Length: 97
Image 1 (cartoon, helix red, strand yellow):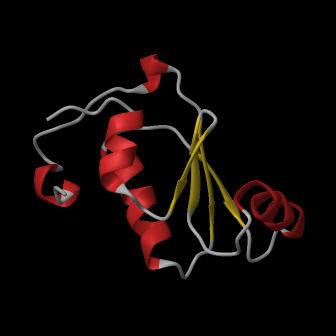
Image 2: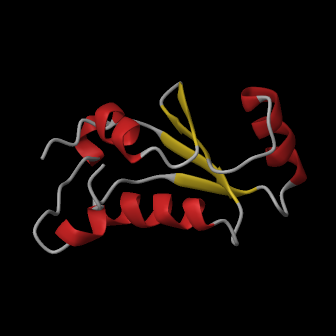
Image 3: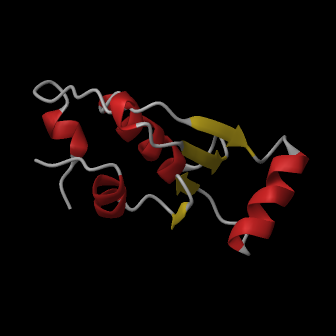
């Protein structure tokens, strides 16, 4: 697994044209949630994040979709990624390096 932070200054891609919808269920204190957000920001990937520690409806939605309480739960279109799996996210978002 590559450390995306080491290439931050050399790779700025525009993946908005791929039109993939990225949704993340997270909490503010979750280290892996913050890594995922940093990853998306570094690659200029638009995403929608829901704070399931305060949004009870989104917490219920996440639990129904994932069957668990752990975060992050990330959806790229309709594909669910549990945790911050950088390799899987690169594959789904077609980030090639």
